[in-house]
Image (cartoon, rainbow, N blue to C red):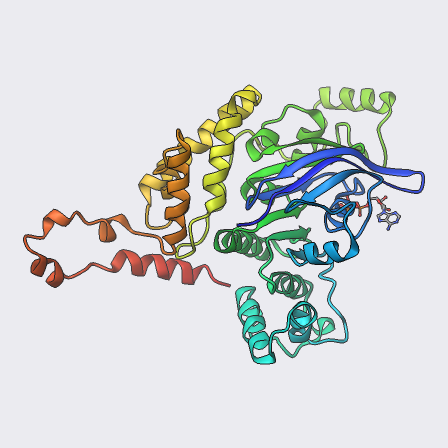
Length: 409
Ligand SMILES: Nc1ncnc2c1ncn2[C@@H]1O[C@H](COP(=O)(O)OP(=O)(O)OP(=O)(O)O)[C@@H](O)[C@H]1O
């Protein structure tokens, strides 16, 4: 299971330039999180502070019981092994082949033999759709391929925490969808805690369990995705809509005169260029592909969210209830393709034992289980012999596999 990352009262400056202050949030173990915010608000600085590459002036970052802001260099070295980081530009070594780039953390941090390293590297390259590109240099491939190579490198040590700085930048919308799906599948397979920094609203709407937003040197909010997507805060609404009218300006804060001018333009029906989408209409969260393990984080997340529900704003409560109803309906409609949703729908969230039972079950549910095949009632067989000779209809399984093959890149 991924590890929790607990950030408290974090403040970071460069000289006299304060980047953000008093940031507190908890990335729950194994859940997928996104961090939004206008350019320059310090999202990348935040990621680098989480892995101890930058040192904050105040506050703590507790990972696996260790506060990395004040641990020894040796402890920090050990904690860093828990991380897989996809930097904004892929951060590949230009003179090394993709194979050597991806093998680098294994050669640096483990004593694995070359044949084992080769097996792991080729497996991760296949996972990100780069099979066959082992001998290429970073300069010979597209930006999207570099990004995927960076992701493969981030995964080779089977990280407990994955940080992705703008995984979609430089990718077309389709490749972005593949990378997003991959992150959800990886989360389901290895239960790693994931933090994605992104400007991509579609990713924010469909991928994370939780979303946070930085603005004006502060964390505006952090919570279940429905909370941010239904927020009435002007900065959140403006950011989601991508509108130039609102508190976010091109470079710095807007003054009152400009704000008044904009209000008059809006009243006159002039467009701020933003989408008219209704973000309180929650789009279903992307689910692991058929054939991928149940997302245990989804079970833990729903348990957490149900517990915090009464403390959330009414809009968020209504959106969460609608999300749950939609997920349960989808689980009932197509149990062959949404194993995680089926697990959620079958979980008794009213007791700890019910949740623990679902988590234990999830460990064994590596395949989606088409209920019409696997859960065929035993009483249809008159005798045990009958049962053995009954032809098993595997078409539902085959369809699920075909569907998942068709979705590969
Ligand atoms: N090592 C550094 N030394 C001094 N200033 C820095 C350093 N790293 C970042 N900054 C400053 O910190 C601020 C936040 O930068 P950061 O890259 O974290 O923003 P961001 O929110 O990730 O932006 P974007 O969305 O455009 O990538 C910027 O003003 C940047 O110039």
